[in-house]
Image (tube, one colour):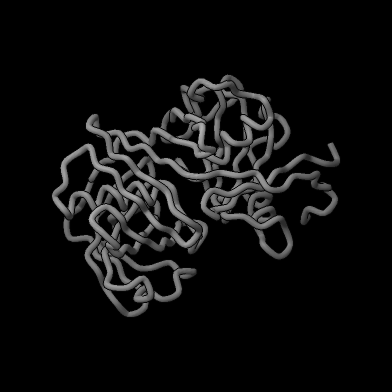
Length: 280
């Protein structure tokens, strides 16, 4: 095949290239160099990551691939377990392509199957599952010459959440912030910097491992809501509005300990990519 189809979408400006590959045969094991090229904002299409769309029964990555499996790769080509904004964009594509109906969609990920619902107001809600707080205690993150204590919240992927006085304090988040102890996150970590805007509203910036600073991070907004509720000693159920540079989402921490993420998702471009343009 000399060309392959692609789509471009975003959820609160966290943007992705989607590669329809229902049989899992078009892109093989999705070479990391192809992902890096597609995500390059100068030579490629430009994105924070790539979402390959595979029928759940045709994937070979996890035991339960759901109705459709989201093979997610970071912009640097590395594999990521889950993406809360990405899974909304993923389901928006499935709906517009007529591949799913009105019932919840079971999306397989490397962090388990996520149930996703299309809402009447155009937003999409994802059952993100249960957060865990694996520790260790005493985590410190560092950026721009400052240090802050941080809470490790795992949403299927790791997050370190730090409360700051101003979102300007961390400086340039294109560069990876540091953390200690060094062995706390052997596979890297997403780091969120947060300010409280009101009783149930926070704002954040994020450095995503493998991507740098992004305009939003879905799993990160969930981790931040958990950290904010714990800091305020709020019991579940509790709902937070989380403001990100690309917009805002709602996170509902249910009484059964599951987190629901609700926000927008759009598909805004599509086309065919000529393989002859790919780097050798």
